[in-house]
Image 1 (cartoon, rainbow, N blue to C red):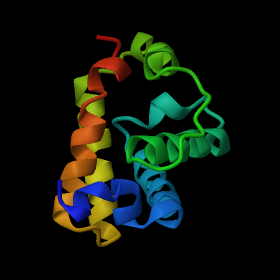
Image 2: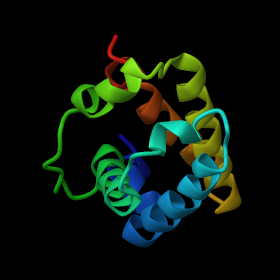
Image 3: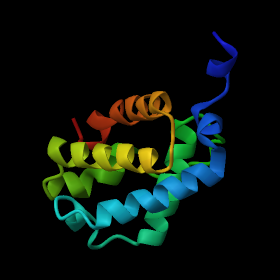
Length: 126
């Protein structure tokens, strides 16, 4: 394992400040996307932003302070509303675009995308 691989993705993308900036920009994109914004109609967005910041921190190898529901449980209501692969794909697109906009190197975007892709089944209740 190289020295770079020992450093978490969380640290390599810039830590807390980078995650916070990415989540804020990401949700701006999501909430302006007619394909997926309806899933957030009844969502406390302040709380949602904090959940995603914590999830991304943990998923990318940062400090683990997550105490929320599982991804499956947290998205079950949305699955009942019709959340499917096309919606997950839209979210993935916004994540990639957000990271590009923040000048994250392509290899780190790919690493982040692989991590998020690995939870597709859980999010979609499969």
